[in-house]
Every structure is written in structure tokens, then in C-alpha cells.
Length: 381
Ligand SMILES: Cc1cc2nc3c(=O)[nH]c(=O)nc-3n(C[C@H](O)[C@H](O)[C@H](O)COP(=O)(O)OP(=O)(O)OC[C@H]3O[C@@H](n4cnc5c(N)ncnc54)[C@H](O)[C@@H]3O)c2cc1C
Image 1 (cartoon, protein in one colour):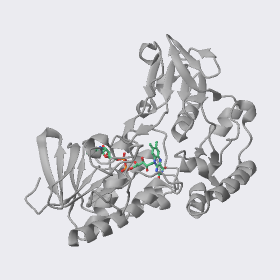
Image 2: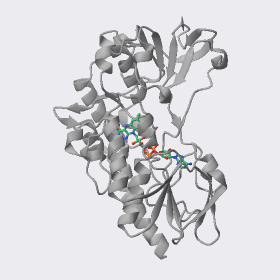
Image 3: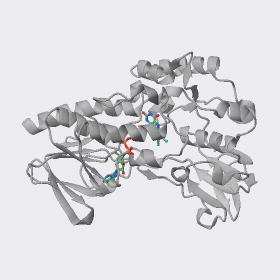
Image 4: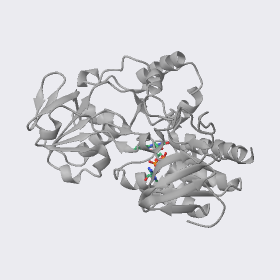
């Protein structure tokens, strides 16, 4: 590392970590980003090819650097990676790659000790954890999973439809990722695509008459949940066709109530048309496997060539901070985020662990400024 005074370490070189480091640097605080992979933006390098931000370019920019207009309104995955690379260069961020932080301990002197790969021990004045909401793929422990003879993979390992051309594929889970992968497969030559649905999702148009859904999310964010639920139902009726006949009924609980439980609405990037055209067939939830068969919640048995589990991710913060009192809640999420540090862990900040309706890039940009302000206050105290 270097011989300069103890820096603030930022763990993770994704958008959240880079934004926090830039905001700290802008306030004259030396921040060093530690990234376990070889480059910044590791998560975005791995996402499937077709992915675009579903938040707008302008509302997804991080502090101090706009995204170029030529990226268009809905920025492609590759351009997100370009932007993150440029962002690190533009802000002259100090970044150490190829180092994984494994555990944090208070150093007893108001700072923090970081244990990292290769036996490294680092000391910090404060730490920002930006290791990602979508850290570790979560694959449910379906009965019969280990002896399933078909191909089973997590959506994190899906890139493009070409390897599935002519195949019968079951996509499990209808969040934004599952919905988009199903459409990608249907458009990319899969012979049959079924989408296993446990709870019908809220589906929203990405934009209506030029007005992006994200802007609505920002406007309604602080309104009462029941009011937003009612508004959401009216908008859905007016803008999204009823897909009940195809196996995708309108959800029983309100849009914002579901967001509060952690389920972000599905932005339509082709699902509605694909379902209506029969190119994506909603089916019952996946319950178990039996040899080469997938057994669904309605008792039916199907034999897909491949099963793609779009079943989400874990935060996986337990190893890093799970041993510290009062830092994680019962779901393994930080109790305090943004500019607030947990009461029992002063100088420890988290960014990127909320999943707001207003967009995560925007949230992380805002958190970065709050964290930088709070860290300065912490260092001056
Ligand atoms: C498919 C998909 C699409 C999304 N689309 C949007 C969108 O359109 N708009 C939006 O606002 N949000 C979107 N999000 C949500 C969110 O903005 C992104 O996931 C974003 O990348 C989160 O940034 P992050 O920095 O918190 O985490 P990440 O981008 O995951 O970065 C975390 C970094 O930390 C590193 N790391 C992890 N653990 C360690 C460790 N122990 N030591 C060192 N380094 C470590 C990782 O290698 C990684 O580089 C999307 C998420 C997904 C999964």
C-alpha cells in the first residue's frame, strides 16, 4: 500500500464505492478503494449482454461526472462499464485491485483494522462498505436439486441466448432479471420459454409518453404507502394490459407495499408482448426436481433442457461484519446506511444496501455525499 497517513478505505469498486471515494476526495479526505477483482465495475462486466440501465442516464450519474449524451437515455451495460472506468480516471481515484477484504475489526483507537486476502492487515480511520446488494447468487435449495440431470444455472451466469437456441428453457423468478432473460431467450431463438412465477409481479412501463417510471418513483417516494398503492393500481389499469388469461394476474398486494417488502416492480422491456404472443409462457412456481423433471407448484412436471434461476442474491456481509454487535439486522442487511454509522460501530458506513423505487445509482450518488460529509465530521471529532 503506501506510507501516507491512514486513509479511509472503501471496500468495493462498483458504482457505490467509486462514488463514495470521489465524494471523499472532493472533501479533501484520502480514500483508497479496495476491489477484489482485477478491474472496477466487476458486477457490470458480468451482467448479461442485453442489459441496459432501466433508470435514465441523467438520473444515474454519480457525483462530479455526467454520463455522455451519446450513451442515450437507457445506457447499455458496456457503456456503464465505460462510464465507471472513466469515473475512476476522471476523479483520480486511488484503487487497489485483486484484494478481498475478509473481516473488519475496531482497532480500539477510533479506527478500523481490515483483514484482507494474502494475509494483509490494513488500518483505516474510517471504512465504507460498498460490496454490493447483489453480492452472492442465491440458489434455492429445491428438493432434488443436486441430482437434477438437466442443466441448472443461476441468472448471474447467463450472458446471451445463443447457447439456448432450439432449446426448451425454464426461467425461474419474475423480477426484472428473470423477465428480461425470458424475453431475451424468446427473441434469441429458444424453442420454448416458460417463466415460473410464485408471486405475480407489478409490471410498469419503463416510460409513458416520454415520462420515465423512475421519475414517478422519485415523486411518490415519500408519500403514504396506501396512497401510492392506489395510484399504482390506477396507472397499471390504464397502461398495462390484464395478462390473467396468460397466467400473469394483477398482483393482490399494492405496488409500493411490495417495494417496501423488497420487490421492485418489473419494468417492461418486452415481457408483455412476449407473453401475449405466447413466446414466454408463465407457469406455476418451481417446487422441486425429480431426475430430469422439474416439478411445479400445480403438480405438473416438465422436462426443460435448461433451468435458469433468476432467484436473486444475498448481501453476504456476515463474514465481513456479522461478528460486530448491532451492525446487521436479522435479514443480514446493515442497520444503518448512507451518512449514518451504526451506534456501536462509529466510522463504519454502508452504501448500496437499500433498493429504493427511485433507483439505486441515484441513491448511491446521494449516499456518497452524505457519507463524505459524515466521515469528515467523524475524522474531525
Ligand atoms: C441486473 C441488474 C440491473 C440493474 N439495473 C439497475 C438500473 O438500471 N438502475 C439502478 O439504479 N440500479 C440498477 N441495479 C442495482 C444497482 O445499481 C447495481 O447492482 C449496482 O452495480 C450496485 O452498485 P454497488 O457498487 O453497490 O455494487 P456492485 O456493482 O456489485 O459493486 C461491488 C463491488 O465490490 C467488490 N467486492 C465485493 N466484496 C468485496 C470484498 N470483500 N473486498 C473487496 N471487494 C469486494 C465486487 O467485486 C464489486 O466490484 C441493477 C442491478 C442488477 C443486478
